[in-house]
Image (tube, rainbow, N blue to C red):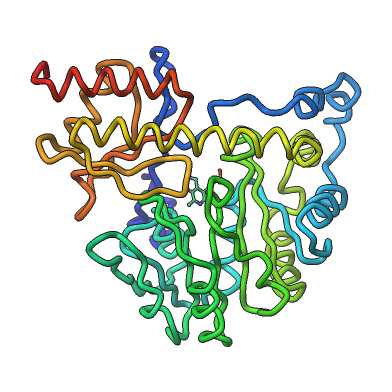
Amino acid sequence: MSRFLDPRYSGLKEYVPGEQPRDRKYIKLNTNESPFPPSASVMKCATESETADLRLYSDPSQTVLRKKLADHYGVKPENVLVGDGSDEVLNFCFMCFAHGRAAFADITYGFYKVLADLHSIETRIVPLADDFTVDPAKYEGIGIFTVIANPNAPTGIALKVSDIERIVASNPDSVVVVDEAYVDFGAESCLPLIEKYDNLAVVRTYSKSFSLAGARLGYCFADAGLISDLDRIRNSCNPYNVGRLSLLAGAAAIDDAAYYELNCGRIAVNREYTTAKLGELGFCVLPSSANFVFASHPGISGKELYSGLKERGILVRYFDLPRIDGHIRITIGTKEQTDALIAALSEMIGGDR
Ligand code: PMP
Protein backbone atom coordinates (compact mmCIF):
# COMPACT_ATOMS: atom_id res chain seq x y z
CA MET A 1 0.00 0.00 0.00
CA SER A 2 1.34 3.45 -0.82
CA ARG A 3 0.98 6.47 1.45
CA PHE A 4 -1.32 7.99 -1.17
CA LEU A 5 -4.22 5.56 -0.82
CA ASP A 6 -7.34 7.19 0.59
CA PRO A 7 -7.61 5.79 4.16
CA ARG A 8 -11.22 4.92 3.36
CA TYR A 9 -9.85 1.99 1.35
CA SER A 10 -6.91 0.94 3.49
CA GLY A 11 -8.89 -1.76 5.32
CA LEU A 12 -10.72 -3.04 2.27
CA LYS A 13 -10.79 -6.84 1.97
CA GLU A 14 -10.65 -7.43 -1.77
CA TYR A 15 -12.64 -10.12 -3.51
CA VAL A 16 -10.42 -13.12 -4.16
CA PRO A 17 -11.40 -14.68 -7.48
CA GLY A 18 -10.97 -18.40 -8.12
CA GLU A 19 -7.56 -19.38 -9.43
CA GLN A 20 -6.87 -18.96 -13.15
CA PRO A 21 -3.52 -20.80 -13.14
CA ARG A 22 -1.00 -20.73 -15.95
CA ASP A 23 1.54 -23.18 -14.45
CA ARG A 24 0.04 -26.38 -15.85
CA LYS A 25 -3.10 -27.72 -17.46
CA TYR A 26 -5.77 -28.49 -14.90
CA ILE A 27 -9.25 -29.92 -15.14
CA LYS A 28 -10.79 -26.61 -14.13
CA LEU A 29 -13.84 -27.09 -11.95
CA ASN A 30 -13.31 -24.04 -9.74
CA THR A 31 -14.98 -20.97 -11.27
CA ASN A 32 -18.26 -22.25 -12.71
CA GLU A 33 -17.29 -21.61 -16.33
CA SER A 34 -18.95 -23.64 -19.07
CA PRO A 35 -17.04 -26.64 -20.42
CA PHE A 36 -18.60 -25.95 -23.84
CA PRO A 37 -17.32 -23.40 -26.38
CA PRO A 38 -19.42 -20.39 -27.41
CA SER A 39 -21.88 -21.03 -30.23
CA ALA A 40 -21.13 -20.88 -33.97
CA SER A 41 -22.47 -17.32 -34.44
CA VAL A 42 -20.34 -16.05 -31.56
CA MET A 43 -17.26 -17.68 -33.03
CA LYS A 44 -17.78 -15.65 -36.21
CA CYS A 45 -18.13 -12.24 -34.48
CA ALA A 46 -14.54 -11.08 -34.47
CA THR A 47 -14.28 -10.55 -38.23
CA GLU A 48 -11.47 -8.50 -39.72
CA SER A 49 -13.78 -5.53 -40.27
CA GLU A 50 -15.25 -5.66 -36.74
CA THR A 51 -11.72 -5.92 -35.38
CA ALA A 52 -10.68 -2.92 -37.46
CA ASP A 53 -13.63 -1.02 -35.96
CA LEU A 54 -12.10 -1.44 -32.51
CA ARG A 55 -10.53 1.96 -33.17
CA LEU A 56 -14.04 3.35 -32.57
CA TYR A 57 -15.75 3.49 -29.20
CA SER A 58 -18.53 1.04 -28.49
CA ASP A 59 -22.18 2.14 -28.46
CA PRO A 60 -22.74 3.82 -25.07
CA SER A 61 -26.49 3.18 -25.36
CA GLN A 62 -25.99 -0.56 -25.99
CA THR A 63 -28.97 -0.27 -28.36
CA VAL A 64 -28.61 -3.48 -30.34
CA LEU A 65 -27.92 -5.78 -27.43
CA ARG A 66 -30.60 -4.25 -25.21
CA LYS A 67 -33.16 -4.73 -27.99
CA LYS A 68 -31.98 -8.28 -28.59
CA LEU A 69 -32.25 -9.19 -24.91
CA ALA A 70 -35.59 -7.41 -24.59
CA ASP A 71 -37.08 -9.28 -27.57
CA HIS A 72 -35.74 -12.62 -26.45
CA TYR A 73 -36.95 -12.33 -22.86
CA GLY A 74 -40.24 -10.56 -23.62
CA VAL A 75 -39.53 -7.18 -22.03
CA LYS A 76 -38.91 -3.68 -23.43
CA PRO A 77 -35.45 -2.26 -24.17
CA GLU A 78 -35.99 0.31 -21.40
CA ASN A 79 -36.14 -2.63 -18.97
CA VAL A 80 -32.58 -3.75 -19.84
CA LEU A 81 -29.07 -2.61 -18.94
CA VAL A 82 -25.81 -4.30 -19.91
CA GLY A 83 -22.67 -4.38 -17.79
CA ASP A 84 -19.03 -5.38 -17.90
CA GLY A 85 -19.90 -8.69 -16.26
CA SER A 86 -22.71 -8.96 -13.74
CA ASP A 87 -20.20 -7.91 -11.08
CA GLU A 88 -20.34 -4.42 -12.57
CA VAL A 89 -24.15 -4.46 -12.65
CA LEU A 90 -24.18 -5.52 -8.99
CA ASN A 91 -21.80 -2.69 -8.19
CA PHE A 92 -24.17 -0.21 -9.84
CA CYS A 93 -27.07 -1.67 -7.85
CA PHE A 94 -25.22 -1.21 -4.54
CA MET A 95 -24.28 2.36 -5.54
CA CYS A 96 -27.83 3.25 -6.61
CA PHE A 97 -30.12 1.55 -4.18
CA ALA A 98 -28.46 0.62 -0.89
CA HIS A 99 -28.88 3.97 0.91
CA GLY A 100 -26.19 2.88 3.36
CA ARG A 101 -27.70 -0.48 4.32
CA ALA A 102 -27.80 -3.89 2.65
CA ALA A 103 -29.15 -7.30 3.64
CA PHE A 104 -27.88 -10.62 2.34
CA ALA A 105 -27.15 -14.15 3.54
CA ASP A 106 -24.14 -15.20 5.63
CA ILE A 107 -23.30 -17.79 3.01
CA THR A 108 -23.69 -16.35 -0.46
CA TYR A 109 -21.67 -14.76 -3.25
CA GLY A 110 -18.70 -13.12 -1.51
CA PHE A 111 -18.72 -10.09 -3.76
CA TYR A 112 -21.78 -8.61 -2.00
CA LYS A 113 -19.79 -8.03 1.18
CA VAL A 114 -16.89 -6.57 -0.79
CA LEU A 115 -19.23 -4.12 -2.55
CA ALA A 116 -20.88 -3.16 0.74
CA ASP A 117 -17.47 -2.44 2.27
CA LEU A 118 -16.29 -0.57 -0.83
CA HIS A 119 -19.23 1.83 -0.53
CA SER A 120 -19.25 1.97 3.31
CA ILE A 121 -22.61 0.23 3.40
CA GLU A 122 -23.67 -1.30 6.70
CA THR A 123 -24.61 -4.97 6.30
CA ARG A 124 -27.44 -6.97 7.83
CA ILE A 125 -26.25 -10.56 7.51
CA VAL A 126 -29.12 -13.03 7.44
CA PRO A 127 -27.99 -16.56 8.36
CA LEU A 128 -29.06 -19.48 6.21
CA ALA A 129 -30.87 -22.29 8.03
CA ASP A 130 -28.86 -25.30 9.25
CA ASP A 131 -29.61 -27.11 5.99
CA PHE A 132 -28.25 -24.08 4.05
CA THR A 133 -31.65 -23.02 2.73
CA VAL A 134 -32.79 -19.40 2.65
CA ASP A 135 -35.72 -18.71 4.98
CA PRO A 136 -37.78 -16.16 3.02
CA ALA A 137 -39.62 -15.09 6.21
CA LYS A 138 -36.35 -13.53 7.42
CA TYR A 139 -36.46 -11.05 4.55
CA GLU A 140 -40.16 -10.26 4.64
CA GLY A 141 -40.60 -6.63 5.63
CA ILE A 142 -36.84 -6.25 6.22
CA GLY A 143 -37.15 -2.72 4.84
CA ILE A 144 -33.64 -2.34 3.42
CA PHE A 145 -31.86 -3.03 0.14
CA THR A 146 -31.67 -6.81 -0.22
CA VAL A 147 -29.63 -9.07 -2.46
CA ILE A 148 -30.53 -12.72 -2.98
CA ALA A 149 -28.62 -15.06 -5.25
CA ASN A 150 -31.08 -17.53 -6.76
CA PRO A 151 -29.91 -20.26 -7.01
CA ASN A 152 -27.61 -19.32 -4.15
CA ALA A 153 -23.85 -19.67 -4.46
CA PRO A 154 -21.93 -21.64 -3.31
CA THR A 155 -24.78 -23.87 -2.10
CA GLY A 156 -26.66 -24.21 -5.42
CA ILE A 157 -29.98 -24.27 -3.56
CA ALA A 158 -32.84 -22.36 -5.23
CA LEU A 159 -35.82 -20.52 -3.79
CA LYS A 160 -39.26 -20.72 -5.37
CA VAL A 161 -40.47 -17.65 -7.25
CA SER A 162 -43.48 -17.47 -4.91
CA ASP A 163 -41.06 -17.05 -1.97
CA ILE A 164 -39.16 -14.32 -3.80
CA GLU A 165 -42.40 -12.58 -4.64
CA ARG A 166 -43.32 -12.47 -0.95
CA ILE A 167 -39.98 -10.82 -0.19
CA VAL A 168 -40.36 -8.25 -2.99
CA ALA A 169 -44.00 -7.49 -2.17
CA SER A 170 -43.32 -7.03 1.53
CA ASN A 171 -40.54 -4.47 0.92
CA PRO A 172 -42.18 -1.99 -1.46
CA ASP A 173 -39.87 0.88 -0.45
CA SER A 174 -36.56 -0.97 -0.90
CA VAL A 175 -34.97 -2.53 -3.93
CA VAL A 176 -34.57 -6.30 -3.98
CA VAL A 177 -31.87 -7.59 -6.32
CA VAL A 178 -32.21 -11.19 -7.41
CA ASP A 179 -28.90 -12.42 -8.78
CA GLU A 180 -29.83 -15.10 -11.31
CA ALA A 181 -26.29 -15.92 -12.45
CA TYR A 182 -27.13 -19.65 -12.37
CA VAL A 183 -30.85 -19.65 -13.10
CA ASP A 184 -30.55 -21.29 -16.54
CA PHE A 185 -29.38 -24.57 -15.03
CA GLY A 186 -32.71 -25.46 -13.49
CA ALA A 187 -34.23 -22.77 -11.25
CA GLU A 188 -37.35 -20.68 -11.83
CA SER A 189 -36.69 -17.11 -12.92
CA CYS A 190 -38.50 -14.21 -11.29
CA LEU A 191 -38.17 -12.11 -14.46
CA PRO A 192 -41.98 -12.01 -15.04
CA LEU A 193 -42.30 -10.16 -11.73
CA ILE A 194 -40.56 -7.01 -12.99
CA GLU A 195 -43.80 -5.92 -14.65
CA LYS A 196 -45.60 -6.06 -11.33
CA TYR A 197 -42.95 -4.67 -8.96
CA ASP A 198 -40.98 -1.47 -9.48
CA ASN A 199 -38.53 -2.46 -6.71
CA LEU A 200 -37.19 -5.67 -8.28
CA ALA A 201 -33.93 -5.93 -10.25
CA VAL A 202 -33.04 -9.26 -11.86
CA VAL A 203 -29.31 -9.56 -12.58
CA ARG A 204 -28.00 -12.13 -15.05
CA THR A 205 -24.71 -13.04 -16.68
CA TYR A 206 -23.35 -14.43 -19.93
CA SER A 207 -20.48 -16.01 -17.99
CA LYS A 208 -22.06 -19.35 -17.13
CA SER A 209 -24.88 -20.67 -19.35
CA PHE A 210 -23.69 -18.65 -22.38
CA SER A 211 -20.04 -19.80 -22.22
CA LEU A 212 -18.79 -16.18 -22.32
CA ALA A 213 -17.01 -15.58 -19.00
CA GLY A 214 -14.07 -14.01 -20.82
CA ALA A 215 -16.27 -11.54 -22.72
CA ARG A 216 -17.35 -9.95 -19.41
CA LEU A 217 -21.04 -9.45 -20.05
CA GLY A 218 -23.80 -9.14 -17.51
CA TYR A 219 -27.28 -7.66 -17.72
CA CYS A 220 -30.14 -6.49 -15.62
CA PHE A 221 -33.91 -6.55 -16.10
CA ALA A 222 -35.99 -4.13 -14.07
CA ASP A 223 -38.66 -1.47 -14.16
CA ALA A 224 -37.65 1.40 -16.49
CA GLY A 225 -37.23 3.68 -13.46
CA LEU A 226 -34.59 1.44 -11.89
CA ILE A 227 -32.82 1.01 -15.24
CA SER A 228 -32.61 4.79 -15.70
CA ASP A 229 -31.05 5.08 -12.22
CA LEU A 230 -28.52 2.39 -13.08
CA ASP A 231 -27.78 4.16 -16.35
CA ARG A 232 -27.14 7.39 -14.47
CA ILE A 233 -24.42 5.65 -12.46
CA ARG A 234 -23.12 3.74 -15.50
CA ASN A 235 -22.79 6.95 -17.48
CA SER A 236 -21.04 8.56 -14.54
CA CYS A 237 -18.54 5.71 -14.11
CA ASN A 238 -17.88 4.33 -17.57
CA PRO A 239 -20.34 5.08 -20.40
CA TYR A 240 -18.53 2.75 -22.82
CA ASN A 241 -18.59 0.01 -20.20
CA VAL A 242 -18.98 -2.87 -22.66
CA GLY A 243 -16.58 -3.32 -25.56
CA ARG A 244 -17.64 -3.64 -29.20
CA LEU A 245 -16.77 -7.34 -29.58
CA SER A 246 -18.52 -8.26 -26.35
CA LEU A 247 -21.68 -6.43 -27.42
CA LEU A 248 -21.59 -8.35 -30.71
CA ALA A 249 -20.93 -11.67 -29.00
CA GLY A 250 -23.84 -11.10 -26.62
CA ALA A 251 -26.27 -10.48 -29.47
CA ALA A 252 -24.95 -13.43 -31.52
CA ALA A 253 -25.33 -15.74 -28.52
CA ILE A 254 -29.03 -14.92 -28.31
CA ASP A 255 -29.41 -16.03 -31.95
CA ASP A 256 -28.11 -19.43 -30.90
CA ALA A 257 -30.24 -19.76 -27.75
CA ALA A 258 -31.18 -23.36 -28.63
CA TYR A 259 -27.51 -24.43 -28.52
CA TYR A 260 -27.10 -22.99 -25.03
CA GLU A 261 -30.33 -24.56 -23.79
CA LEU A 262 -29.02 -27.90 -24.95
CA ASN A 263 -25.76 -27.34 -23.06
CA CYS A 264 -27.62 -26.37 -19.88
CA GLY A 265 -29.57 -29.62 -20.19
CA ARG A 266 -26.33 -31.59 -20.59
CA ILE A 267 -24.93 -29.91 -17.49
CA ALA A 268 -28.08 -30.67 -15.49
CA VAL A 269 -27.83 -34.35 -16.48
CA ASN A 270 -24.15 -34.46 -15.54
CA ARG A 271 -24.92 -32.67 -12.25
CA GLU A 272 -27.22 -35.54 -11.28
CA TYR A 273 -24.58 -38.08 -12.35
CA THR A 274 -21.89 -36.25 -10.36
CA THR A 275 -24.15 -36.05 -7.31
CA ALA A 276 -24.87 -39.78 -7.47
CA LYS A 277 -21.17 -40.67 -7.87
CA LEU A 278 -20.16 -38.41 -4.99
CA GLY A 279 -22.90 -40.00 -2.88
CA GLU A 280 -21.43 -43.44 -3.57
CA LEU A 281 -18.12 -42.18 -2.16
CA GLY A 282 -19.83 -41.04 1.06
CA PHE A 283 -20.13 -37.36 0.22
CA CYS A 284 -23.04 -35.26 1.37
CA VAL A 285 -24.10 -33.13 -1.61
CA LEU A 286 -26.56 -30.23 -1.33
CA PRO A 287 -29.46 -30.29 -3.82
CA SER A 288 -28.20 -28.00 -6.58
CA SER A 289 -30.08 -26.16 -9.31
CA ALA A 290 -26.86 -24.58 -10.58
CA ASN A 291 -23.83 -25.65 -12.66
CA PHE A 292 -21.92 -26.67 -9.54
CA VAL A 293 -22.41 -28.82 -6.48
CA PHE A 294 -21.39 -28.11 -2.90
CA ALA A 295 -20.15 -31.24 -1.20
CA SER A 296 -18.59 -32.37 2.05
CA HIS A 297 -17.23 -35.68 3.32
CA PRO A 298 -17.31 -36.86 6.94
CA GLY A 299 -13.76 -38.21 6.79
CA ILE A 300 -11.79 -35.43 5.12
CA SER A 301 -11.73 -31.63 5.39
CA GLY A 302 -12.55 -29.21 2.60
CA LYS A 303 -8.98 -27.99 2.56
CA GLU A 304 -7.57 -31.51 2.21
CA LEU A 305 -10.03 -32.28 -0.56
CA TYR A 306 -9.02 -29.11 -2.38
CA SER A 307 -5.26 -29.73 -2.07
CA GLY A 308 -5.48 -33.45 -2.82
CA LEU A 309 -7.41 -32.72 -5.99
CA LYS A 310 -5.04 -29.93 -7.00
CA GLU A 311 -2.07 -32.30 -6.66
CA ARG A 312 -3.94 -34.61 -9.02
CA GLY A 313 -4.49 -31.85 -11.58
CA ILE A 314 -8.09 -30.96 -10.69
CA LEU A 315 -9.08 -27.51 -9.43
CA VAL A 316 -12.15 -27.01 -7.26
CA ARG A 317 -13.10 -24.10 -5.00
CA TYR A 318 -12.59 -24.19 -1.25
CA PHE A 319 -13.72 -21.41 1.09
CA ASP A 320 -11.88 -21.07 4.39
CA LEU A 321 -14.95 -19.64 6.10
CA PRO A 322 -17.07 -20.57 9.13
CA ARG A 323 -19.86 -23.11 8.45
CA ILE A 324 -18.52 -24.09 5.02
CA ASP A 325 -14.85 -24.98 5.53
CA GLY A 326 -15.78 -28.67 5.37
CA HIS A 327 -17.08 -28.23 1.84
CA ILE A 328 -15.75 -27.92 -1.68
CA ARG A 329 -17.62 -26.37 -4.59
CA ILE A 330 -17.27 -28.38 -7.76
CA THR A 331 -18.20 -26.92 -11.15
CA ILE A 332 -20.10 -29.36 -13.35
CA GLY A 333 -18.10 -29.90 -16.50
CA THR A 334 -18.29 -32.77 -18.97
CA LYS A 335 -18.93 -36.38 -18.01
CA GLU A 336 -15.26 -37.16 -18.74
CA GLN A 337 -14.21 -34.45 -16.29
CA THR A 338 -16.56 -35.87 -13.66
CA ASP A 339 -15.10 -39.35 -14.17
CA ALA A 340 -11.58 -37.94 -13.67
CA LEU A 341 -12.76 -36.14 -10.52
CA ILE A 342 -14.40 -39.27 -9.11
CA ALA A 343 -11.30 -41.37 -9.86
CA ALA A 344 -9.10 -38.84 -8.03
CA LEU A 345 -11.47 -38.66 -5.06
CA SER A 346 -11.72 -42.47 -4.83
CA GLU A 347 -7.94 -42.62 -4.66
CA MET A 348 -7.86 -39.98 -1.91
CA ILE A 349 -10.71 -41.40 0.13
CA GLY A 350 -9.51 -44.96 -0.33
CA GLY A 351 -6.63 -44.08 2.01
CA ASP A 352 -4.00 -43.27 -0.58
CA ARG A 353 -3.69 -39.64 0.49
N1 PMP B 1 -23.22 -13.63 -9.18
C1 PMP B 1 -22.86 -14.82 -8.73
C2 PMP B 1 -23.75 -15.52 -7.75
C3 PMP B 1 -21.66 -15.41 -9.15
O1 PMP B 1 -21.27 -16.60 -8.67
C4 PMP B 1 -20.85 -14.72 -10.08
C5 PMP B 1 -19.57 -15.35 -10.60
N2 PMP B 1 -18.48 -15.20 -9.82
C6 PMP B 1 -21.25 -13.45 -10.50
C7 PMP B 1 -22.45 -12.94 -10.05
C8 PMP B 1 -20.40 -12.60 -11.40
O2 PMP B 1 -20.32 -13.08 -12.66
P1 PMP B 1 -19.80 -12.19 -13.88
O3 PMP B 1 -19.22 -10.91 -13.32
O4 PMP B 1 -18.80 -13.05 -14.56
O5 PMP B 1 -21.00 -11.91 -14.71
